[in-house]
Length: 379
Image: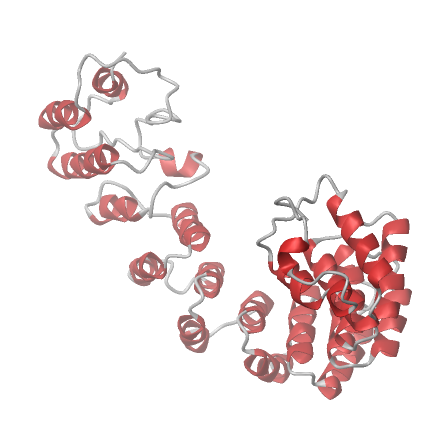
């Protein structure tokens, strides 16, 4: 069945309410054109001309296609409940706002959440601002969960200024609001801004959760502020979060980045549950302090306890080998990396560059030039 006939078969016959939605379509010129045509047909109440135009857009009437083809991947839905029943919105989602503007589709919380989620996924700031401006004209402009979602969207788009402007305009804020902005500042290399927000949040009577404290500890480590870090550690005890694996790992990393490896080790040892990130934080801390032998001992212990090294682990181990000046350990760790079948690492990865320039066998003079290393595309 050709595409035009397939489309006609699924189109609802009523006039202004006959909405054709394509979602999860391939981003082709034909799909975009069809989308615009049916937006207009919904506005002006006729589909007859649209059907004919679709045939021209699609092209060859004789070409055969399966109903399961990705061009029409999840079937055409014939009513305005599509966006409430469908898990995703395709493209930028702005065609949906066109339908809302012309009165063919009523926007509700579910629709706006899906549009915001789409903008968050694609990290397209222009589209994010358009959706936000549309919400400002709706009944949901003062809705706290919607505003929190918008703030989170701006953070994911990398626009911390937009996020802060929205934050400042919000008359009511909850823990999600504060944590979203604190986390955004921490993730986007603005640690001081994150740390300044915390006492203000406490003054508003809110208690931090594991995500708030993890982000704040990361910010403290980024600026090597051990005084602030110790205060945060006290709050971890106060709110019973010191044993949480995410908070505990953030504490390990914070103390390590501040150069306090003994305290980092104590926190690590006290963790009831550890993960690869916990091990990486401690190994990296010793590597940064040029305590190569200690880092390598931790690496082998990590392997013995059944944890899988990551790219970050190997980067730290290479640095540790260089600082320890250990040819044998360097050879052994690279062998371990190359035999991890589920963790193949491209020769273009950053940690491989570290290996070429800092590896101990270069210092020991065993290899005179990088091309003597036989990486064969993987490490």
